[in-house]
Image 1: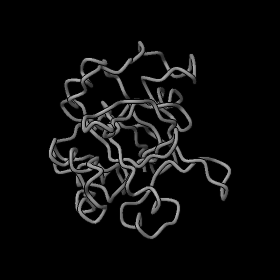
Image 2: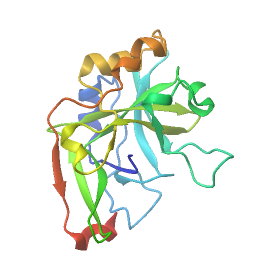
Image 3: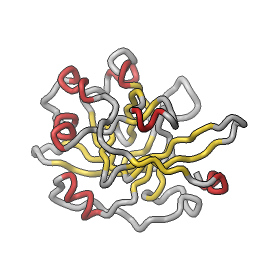
Image 4: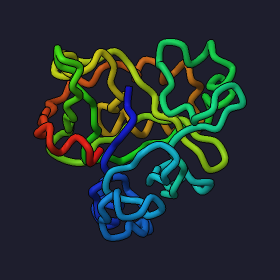
Length: 205
């Protein structure tokens, strides 16, 4: 699953990476324990995250959406949607035409040791990664798939990392039906760095 991710990015970096005409306003990085209202840094469920989608003029736009969908069948938000069952679940089926990208510098997964201890791991690449997501109103949900070999030693699921500009463009293309882009929702084949933080830092997450 994907319950935390990092957006340690500048507006210029995001604009350049995703071809935005106007750089988004990315605030200074603020440690998450200081304020739950300031986006940037580590994004947790219910906090706002930067997302990129297709604009009405054919270009791309960036905005801030709340991480997690509010639903009436559970107390907390739904933060992940399994790629394998997107078209089967009513909650997600109606959002299949509302697709966006979530730029991240890394995401966080926890490795559970034999004693039950949880160890946070940062997973990222050499640059900005684009996670596949669905959105509605002011909310988004991250799409997940089976873990790649690099991630499997930490967790059996991972967010869908779209593999390159072509895949990213196709995912947010409003002219493509979900059936045309469903094949993009596969484990990431690119290089990923997995870095485990010391147990003493686990409380920060």
